[in-house]
Amino acid sequence: MQNADYRTNKGRMCRIGALCWFLLILAGCGGSRPAATPAPGSSAATIGTTAGGATFRGEELAGRLLFVHGGVIWQWRGREATQLLGDGTAIQPTFSSDGSRIAYVTKGNDYSDVLIADAAGAPLAQLTRNGSRLPINSQERVYETTWAFYPAWAPAGDRLALAAQPSPPVGDPPAEYNLGLYELLVSGEAPRQIYAAEGAHCGRSVYAPSGEALLFVHAGAGASGEQQIYRLELAGGIAAPVSGMPKPSYDPAISPDGRWLAFVTRDGTRTDIFALPLAGGGTPLRLSDMGTARAPAFSPDGRQIAFLAIAPGEGGFDLWVADLTADAGGGLRANAPRRLTTGLGLDADSGLSWAG
Figure 1: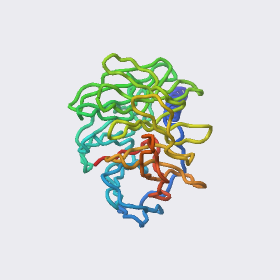
Figure 2: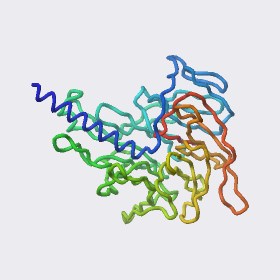
Figure 3: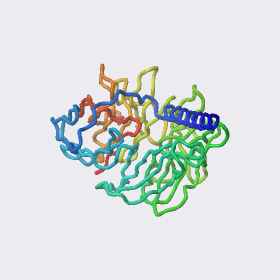
Figure 4: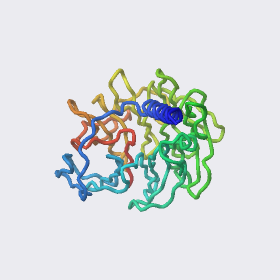
């Protein structure tokens, strides 16, 4: 029995270590000190009020902006931030293009699944079933479970792209398969693999406005693996780095007019937001200069960009917004950012999603 327990614990710890490693690779700069969780019953906070020690302040926002704190999906609408859905396991929410549905991920013990809710947070469907009914922490359970992350809506709203594994771990100790790219119809079907790279993980993705291509994070394997944003042509399955994209680069977001690709790049220990024409080429245009910025999201009208950043001397991510303007040459420029929360400790890898 002692040997069996050792093998079970060893296998599970190896699996947890592998998961943490590739999530850190895909997440880039994501560490933060947890902030106080809003007290039970404190489901909403208007600007200038506090929730569990966190301050909401700033201005009224157009549309609806999703963010994640403590495994709960929040929505900023007008001048109020409200807990929308989640029980402590919800991450990575994203609005459909018409804003009527939300795809998101729930994390379980040794697995994660993709689900859909309506705009009010009511559940609609569970699209993957990667868990197991076998005992938690058992070796047998490890060999029945897989991970799925980063759902992204196709423009037509009929399907999702996600980063997932083709099958459960194999070997002893269990060895994880790399995350590949998959598509599945929201009407219900098994995920269909559309891209995988030997020795690399696939991360967050976003559809091009035409729906004919995916922009996604390609993360090389190993401790020195770098992230870079690739473009995958869905018809031919050919993937290549986006022209002019620096390394490392991650957190892709496309402007509503389809002209700009915003992303995060790291220079030493500093991470900031830049933009390139979606068509590729040109020189990256800087949109932030804080050194801790991540997770850009364009407003529905394209006039603002929201992002997460850690303020100097603090330890957790908060929400910021900046106005966007065009410079004399037609390039994109961001004005000085304004801070909307203090001490909230947001989940940077879950990112932001902004809909009308």
